[in-house]
Amino acid sequence: METKRWFAIDKLQDKQEAIQAAAALLKAGEAVAFPTETVYGLGADATNELAVNKIFEAKGRPQDNPLIVHVATAQQLKELVSEIPPYVDKLLEAFTPGPLTFVLPSNGRCADNVTAGLDSVGVRIPDHPAALSLLKQAAVPVAAPSANLSGKPSPTSADHVWADLQGRIAGVLDGGATGVGVESTVLDCTQPIPIILRPGGIAIEQLEQVVGTVMVDPGLANEHERPRSPGMKYRHYSPDAPLWLVKGSADKLQQVVYKESQKGQRVGVMAASGTIARIEADLKKDLGASLESVATALYDALRMFNSQHVDLIICEAFSEEGIGQAVMNRLKKAASHYIE
Ligand code: TXA
Ligand code: MG
Image (cartoon, rainbow, N blue to C red):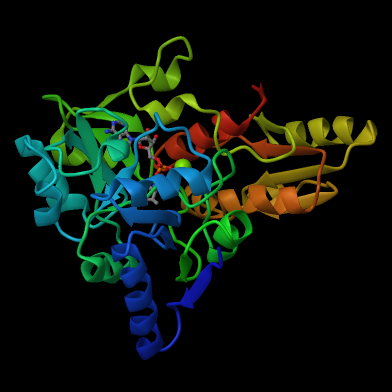
C-alpha cells in the first residue's frame, strides 16, 4: 500500500487541504495517522469494524487490547456512552480538550473490536488543532491507538510514524512534533470514585484538585495483580537495547556507565540536563531541565538510541511527582533492570 503524507504545519491553505484529504480517507474506512498533543494516533472510523481491523493489522496489536475513541466535543463523547457520573462533568470542564481519557459504560455505538468485548469505552478529546479539525471534518468518532508498531516506543513525530508504518496505512497527517510526549491518563469513570488505569498527561494531583479523591489501579504498582486496563499488562515501549534505570546521583550513574563501558559495550545515557552535563559516555541524550521536558523527549530518545545501535541504555530515575508518574511508569515498563 502506498502511504500518503500530508503536511499540516505550513500555510493555512495547505493545512485545510491536508486535513480534508485525511478526513476523506477516514470516512472511506481507511487507517490514517494524525498528531495529537500526546503522541501520534493511528485512526479509523470507530463505528466501522472493518476499518478498525486495519489498525490492529497495521500495528500488529493484540485483539484483546481496547482502543481509545477520539471525538471533537463533550457532546460527541456523551453520544457514545450510557451513563455519566457528575464528577465527569467537572473533569470535562477542567481538562478537555486535553490528555485525559474517560472510561465510561458503552452504549454500543462503537464497533465491538474497539472495546475488545468490554462493556466500557475509553473516549478523549485531544488538544491539538489539526486533530480537532480532522475529527470535525471526518464527523465520525475515531478509534486511535498510538501510531507505532506494537511494542515500539510511541511516536512523537510523523517521522517516527513513517519509520514504523509506511506502506501499511493509507496516510500520515504531519503536524510536526507532539507536545506532551507521553500518552493520555486513562481514568475509569464507571465507579463512584475515579480510578487511574494508566498515568499520563494529566497528573493525579491535578485530578484530585477537581474531584477530591482519586484512586490508582493497584495492578499498576503490584506485578502480581492483573491491571484493569488490558493494555497495561504488555511490556510496551521497549527500545532494542536493554534499558537500565539508575536512581541516585550523577556520580552513581557515572560509575555504572564506566563499569559497563569497560566491558566493551557501547553505552548510551539519557538524563535531565543537570545530570547529563556531569556524565561521560559514548552517546548522551539531554532530556531537558524539567519533568515536562523529559516527558516530551522520552520516546524520541529511545528511538535515537535504537538508530545508533547502542548495546545498553542507561537512564536516570526521575521523581514520580506530577507528570513524573507517567514518565516513570513508561520507563519501568521499558527497563530490564532497576538499580536503586
Ligand atoms: O494519548 C493517548 O492516549 C494516545 C493518543 C493517540 O490519543 N493513544 C493511546 O492509545 O495511547 P493506546 O491504544 O496506545 O493505549 C490505550 C490504553 C490501553 O492501555 C488500553 O488497554 C486502555 O487505554 N483502554 C482503552 N479502552 C479501555 C477500556 N474500555 N477499559 C480499560 N482500559 C482501556
Ligand atoms: Mg500505545
